[in-house]
Image (tube, rainbow, N blue to C red):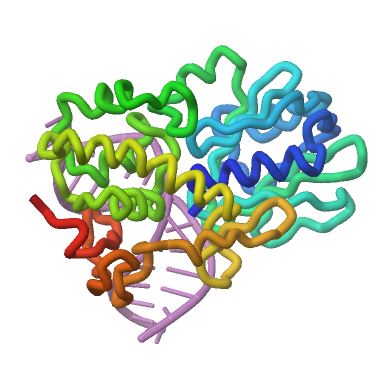
Length: 276
DNA sequence: GTGCCTGTTACCTC
DNA sequence: AGAGGTAACAGGCA
């Protein structure tokens, strides 16, 4: 669930609640496999005493710049952060907790246990196999064309692959392809020049919309996306095709259908997005 | 209870 | 290169 807009919302909210500048007093690990690379004890020892100098994002990774290290967090399916008082007891899905010297604590909940934390040295951030940042200045039409060049894969799995463009997941890819009027199974080498241009423009449009709506929170159950303060996003009300099967296409009123592409549920308008 | 579905990614084989 | 399958894991849902 958390894709680029959700992660970006979390980053911004962490700044709003003045997490930058906080000093980590200690850490607790309730599910060891959340911590990659280091043994949980070593992780806790190493991170204790460090100050959060900055909080940013790279693709779907949260990037905490600490005094000595970089902390990368990937939320995968159900990872969530909450700011609590350090006295609050851990919840059943709490996997890691950072306790700050001011009495606050950052709780990491992750129902499905796929979320991962990586405490690395600053140099190692370059080892992330991530492609273009779609909302940065590096995402030019030229760079986009260049990253497509030579590939023959279907467009949807390509857009989901973080090594080419970083940050898109199943929801936003379906929305992008609807916006650009491209069928999800279209091979990259079949895209016209016009297709590539509309795709290039659709990506930031869809991502910025998601961010301005503070992310997508589908349904009501707990596994969903919630921001650090427990706020829901509202982008689910702006989805044009994702989980809209049976409803009319907002553009042409044709009934939205759901198919499977690369083993992923895929939503599209069969009239706007014709397979060529 | 049973089987199927789910927003992510890594790893494997062909 | 890319397609397809499996796995990690838990819970909702019919």
